[in-house]
Structures are given as structure tokens and as C-alpha cells.
Image 1 (cartoon, rainbow, N blue to C red):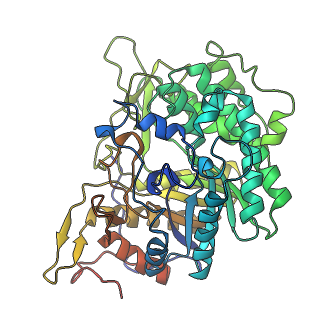
Image 2: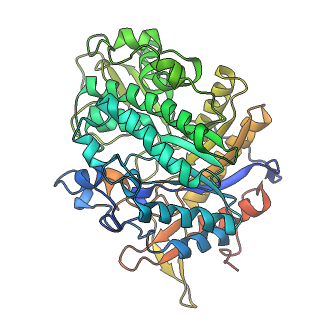
Image 3: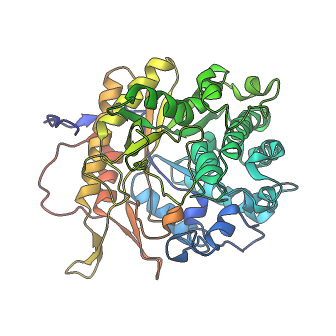
Length: 488
């Protein structure tokens, strides 16, 4: 169990240029799934397939952000956000994944970017947060090499439209999830369960990143920064074969991406570990050089740690890897590794709360890749939030567990900064409650509550706490509040 830390008695202040923002993803909040020329994505198909998501929930309406853009922009401004990380829906821009841009789709994102700039909020655009056009999946999706080149063309189209205003371009969000959960475990769209397909998707996603950066550099005009966001697995070895278990899962989860992206090679041990699954013939000459693009920022997503050991082959194998278990495996070539349940406290996702893991991760990345600028692009927690009514009739959500979670992780980030890590910002996940993928609307990560019946937005206490942080740049020491702050 993580050891208790002595609480700081003074406010912890970030550098003046440290960016404090929030993040969302298109399919999780936009809705308007069949409007204004948007084509179907793999998540439309997946979520509309019976048994794939909790309660049969879909993102057809989600948080209706598409129709409530101005309201949501005003909400961001009221919370003092310095930056907003959003994703662009590929099928809203290119309904079949290829061809000319859909003008109404580009217009929506143009209005979003302009609205952010008008409010003094920095736009951070992610090109891909898992909503692959279904037409491309019908041709093989990320197992088809052609998809990487289609993605590069999509990047060029979006870059030509918004490349004079977006400050940071992120190519992919969590390609680990796209590859291993989408094609290996079946927990995410498109719901395939094939280890060889998952590893093929890993490479084609990496290649897509490199090709997209080339295209963006060719068409943007405002000297933006280029990045990718990875969900790093912070591993804890336990008991029998701990060191070997950590090595194998680190190769699949982390180094399958960081090595080609930042060192220009795939790990030899990863190739050897998965030799019985695939021969890696999908890696062609010149691919890794194209993947290995200089990155201005490396996005870091962190929520919890993962505990592993080698399975003894006789006792029931534990599979507490933090991801929805629907029968397939996101760990090709490693069926003899088991994932151990970890002590609490836990979030509503069942994920353990360990802020020290974030500090360790940032320090480790700093040691491995000195000089690489880092930004925390997602960190947050789902809890069982409840809407209440104040005596004056206004609504509130009291979420002290989330405030404590955010505060302790921000303190961990501050410690990493003090230790020399070049950390440039922090984006809380998520701005608002939304469609939580396979869990539908059962889990609430937002700092803003969404009533899905009325679409009313209610800033939770955590949003008001985060607003004070964003406005002052300082993490206050814990205190017994006289009452929740209010928006003015």
C-alpha cells in the first residue's frame, strides 16, 4: 500500500507558464451522430451492437456538445481553463475516411477553435481518439496498412483548415487502447480478438503518427507543437517471476510505442516475446524512420498502477489489468502473466489510487528521454456522484473524493517538476461527464455534471476547486471549507 506523505503546509505553486486545462473526446461528448454529413465510426457500429456496452448505451446524443458549443465554451471560460484538449471526429471530416472534406464538419471545428481563442483558451487538437470511420474498418481498419496513409491524408485536410490557429497537434490518443483493446481483447471497437491483428495495428498506428506529423508540418503556418499521447502502464512486480512479468508487459504496453517513436527501433525482446503470434513482416523498410519524428511534447495519461507476476499455471489466473474483460486478451504472447488485484482505495472504475505512480512515471520518462518535454494530457477519476439541490434551488455535486484525487496527483506532478522533470502542463480528465466507452453512461469522470435527460451542466465542487487552481496556479493545502465556492 502506498505510504502516507506529509502534507505541505503552504500552497504549491506551478511556474507561470504551466498550462492548466481540461480534456474531452469527440465521440464521448458530441452526439449528432447522424447529422451534417457525419459518417459512421467503429464506435457507432460497436455501441449499437447488442451486448457491447453497458445498458446498450451509445454516443448518438452523448453530452450534445455539437448543439451546445457556445454554452460549453462559456463554461470553460468560467472555469478559468488556460487550454482545452479536444479531439476531431475523423468521420465528421471525411465520412468514409477518404476524399474531400465535409464542409459542415470542418466548420464545427473551426467555430470551436475560434471560440476558444476568443475566450483566451489555447486549442489543443487530437486528430484521433478512437473513432475510425467504419468504411475503413470494413477494409481491415488498423490491420490494413492503407489506413495509415488515409490518416495522413486526413491530417493534411484538417491541418490545411485549422493549421493557422491550433497551438498543439496531437496525432493519436492512447494507441495502446486502439490496438490491444480494439483488436486483441475485444473490449473496444471494433471488437476483434486476434493477437496478431493487435500487433499489426500497433505498427500501423505508429506509422500513421509519423506520416501525419509529416503532413502537418507541410501545411501548418503558425509554428505549432507536435505530440502524441500515450497511456503508460506503471508496473509493480509482485512475487514469483516479478522481474520477467514486468519486462514482458512493459514491452507490450510502453516500449512498443516509445522505442519506435523516440529511439527509432522496435524492442528486440518484444519481437522475440511475440514470435509465436506474428513474424512482424508488416514492418517495411523505412517505416521506423518515418515513425521516428521529433516530438515537441510527449503526452502522458495516468490513472492507476498495474501489478503483475508470472502465473503458476495451476491456481486461478487473476486478470485485474484495469480493463473490461470480455474474453479476449490485450496481452498477445503473454498468457502466463497474471494481473493482481491491488489494495484500495479505488475509484468507481475499480482502479487503485496511487499518486506516487505518476511521480515515478514522470521521473522515469525524464531519465529515459532526457530533454523530452512532457505534458500530463489526462488524469482524473470516476466516482459515484450525486446531484443535490441547495436551499436557493441551485444544483450542486459534492465530490470531495475527486478533489482529493486531483490534489494529490497535482502534488505528485509538482514534486516531479521540483526534481527536474520538464513538465509543461496538466489536463484534467474530463471536462464533463460523458459516454465512457464500454461502460456507457454508468461512470462519471467529469468535473462538470451532465444530466443526460435535460443536458443541464452543473459544475461539481471539483470544478470550482480546479477553477481556483487554474486562476492562481497554486495547489492550496487541504482545509475544511466553510462551504463550496460559487461561480461568479
